[in-house]
Image (cartoon, rainbow, N blue to C red):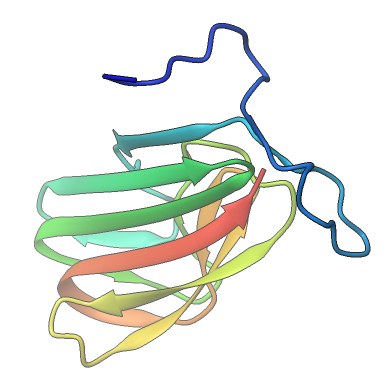
Length: 139
């Protein structure tokens, strides 16, 4: 065939039932792939000096979401432990997941938690130009 294969019906996809399933398998159907951008909002746990800015990308493969976000203040941004960095993830997490974050100099890093639609810092990052975070979670 020439060109893309277009799925004509929702919830249909590539069926891998010809493969031997592992114990505990719940599905062998791959029925979702998506790439996109999103704009993290300013979470209440941030201290922003100057104008807030942000950007983000995500990839969804089946039930797995991989997100990357960057938040910044024109002068600086900081986050405290247990502070909400953003509360508008592109998809709602089914359970709590962990990810990582680091400052613009990549000399300070920490852990983030994905809870529902929020990115929450598990550790503090002091004032820096920007903070980048990445995480993978399931829906």
